[in-house]
Amino acid sequence: MQAGSKPAYFFSQPHQPFFFAGIVWAVAVMLLFGLSYKGILFLQVSPLLCHAYTLLFTVFTPFFTGFIFTTFPRFCQSGVIAKTDYLGIFALLQFGSVLTVAGALLSLPLMAAGSLVLLVSHLRIVSQLQRIYQTGYASTASSDPFWILTGFYFGALSHLLFAVEITTAAFGTDAGLLAPAAAVGIWLYLIFVAFAVGQRMVPFFSHVMTQKRRYFTATVFGLLVLKSILELVGFSWPELFVDTVLGLYMLTEFRRWKLPFRHSPAILQVLHLALFWLPAALLVGALLKTAAVLFGFSAAKVTLHMAAIGFVVTILIGFGTRVTLGHSGQTPHADRFAVALFALVQLLVSVRALYALFSGAFWLFDLSFTLWLLLFVLWGGRYGPVLVSGKKL
Image 1: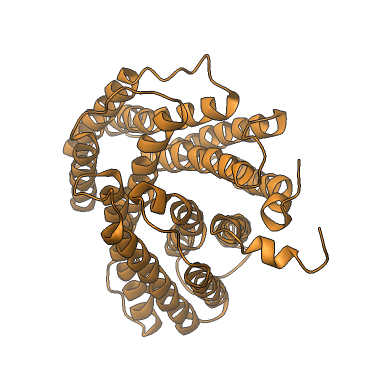
Image 2 (image 1 turned 60 degrees about the vertical axis):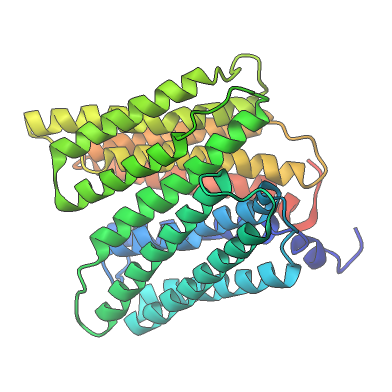
């Protein structure tokens, strides 16, 4: 490769800069949270607010955007996104991320400014997807592109609530919006967008021709909305019931597809596993939380972390690896290194779930924190050069 050509290659496709930024921020913001949680760093906002906001909008949003900007035009049978458009959004997203993280450490007004810049970048992402959706030939209400776009709109709503919460905190008041911002951002953006993409792409990659139930995605979305409302108002038993119904509904549908796990290459086996993590998180989480209510022990956020790490991170690493290799002209596959990374994710989610059950065992937090950093350092070290320069593995 000729000197000076690496920057041109790095920015040549939407997924490359966005994926690379996601890897960098996954390490940076987890270090920020972990060190503040242990009392080594002092933040200008609560570690919980910083943790939720930065993971949603400086880590997962770049990953989502890189993948969706690559595939959404194909879903809608529309033209590709212009390079100037996605690079403008990328620059705004990175500028906002730097301001936000610096502000979390140094100054609340600076963090508020960063959150507003990030909100503008998110609105530009939504506007770009809306334009593709409206001009495409395969965009109809209830279609997969419709639900993906819906998830991004709810992400924008969550982002607005977070931005107001952070901005009012900079003026010394509490808007009380952290709980609704987190509930909408986690269940109706993070989990739902990953689900909407996964339920379309995993069967497609696996060459499964089974027709999905007509209102499958709509039903899942409606139940997630209900779950979010029940979580906010604190109705534990109805929420556990919804978790159980939703988990069983998805599990039944996924089994009906008859995904060829045993006869698939490792890269597809990982995606199959990721898909089943979501109903498993809901069902196992509901069972553990029921036991916690009956027997008086803590099971806070078990379902959340099992879904966010087990489902979202597994599917993120699976799709990220496949897209990275596929768009670099290499046959997508999972070698021993990739399989080891996927095994690391499963260990990570298990340790984090245990910490949710045994919150007094701080060594479990340290272990999960270390495993997260190790996962993204290893993933970036292996596939970062492929994203940056097209290096052949």
